[in-house]
Length: 263
Image (cartoon, rainbow, N blue to C red; front, side):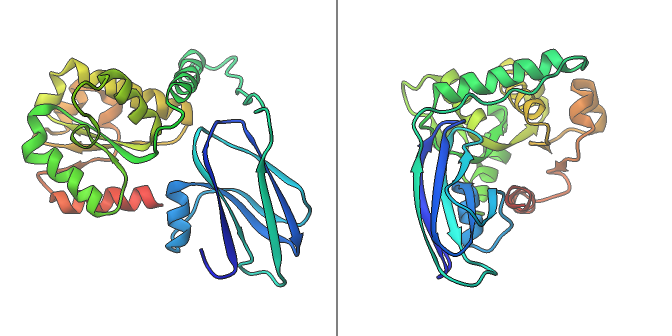
């Protein structure tokens, strides 16, 4: 945090919980951020947050999704001094659900909302990730393992099976946790991927989450495939801007993914 700021660690919070901030002194910027955006703020990068300039207190904000959260109180661009107290109010409010009545995608979006809610409740203490890597085992040595390590070298939090799975782990549950807790999904599309049914489960989870959030989160990487191959597998994926290992190095792909994740 800069000298004129203070960070309050809220720990793991559930979606809908209410945070109350009481200021003592001047108006201040009050920002509710997750772990990734706290790091972005401290590094001077673009930061996504809930909140803003607060002139009256107590000021209340709802946790937008389950995870590890912080309140940042800063005086950037402001005059005066202030102190703050932060507390979590008892009893979370139920989150408002959007109405999809009359929409052709209504049933899909409704199912997506329910998927996210159930998965979040099943793993309230899981750590957040910047990217989830969806891939076929056959591509590990040539592409996926080097890409996972390159993304780590970019200081991203990466869900990759070799990083996260240990003997005896519940595979499906761990994958569901990784899908829910990840901001982006890197999908390595290859001939081997097209033939793996289990990878379709992971991809379906990413598509479901993307539909629920209404924003792009799937980042395709093509390996030994072209436009026609991807089109034959999924026209939707073929329409997404991708990077091919035939044209870009692993380091270049990792750098571009990191740039998107930090935006």
